Length: 71
Image 1 (cartoon, rainbow, N blue to C red):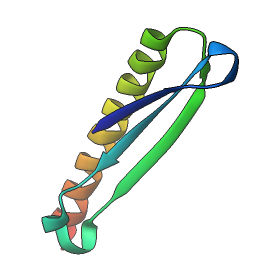
Image 2 (image 1 turned 90 degrees about the horizontal axis):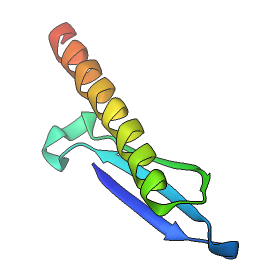
Image 3 (image 1 turned 60 degrees about the horizontal axis):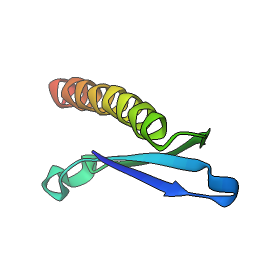
Image 4 (image 1 turned 135 degrees about the vertical axis):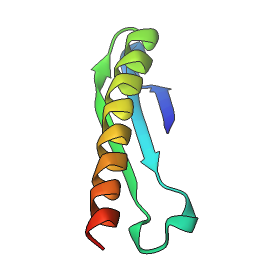
């Protein structure tokens, strides 16, 4: 998982998280990029992105495990 945070106009911050599987996952390769709302504080933007990204990474992992079990 990667976290990105950029300063935008008026000194606000925009954060995003990127969740991806390794290319070795073959057909199940997955990339999720979500841009979050604007924050006044950089640290809050990063913390929010980390929390959401971690939750989606867990969801992705459990979903792929279920798919693998069905194959």
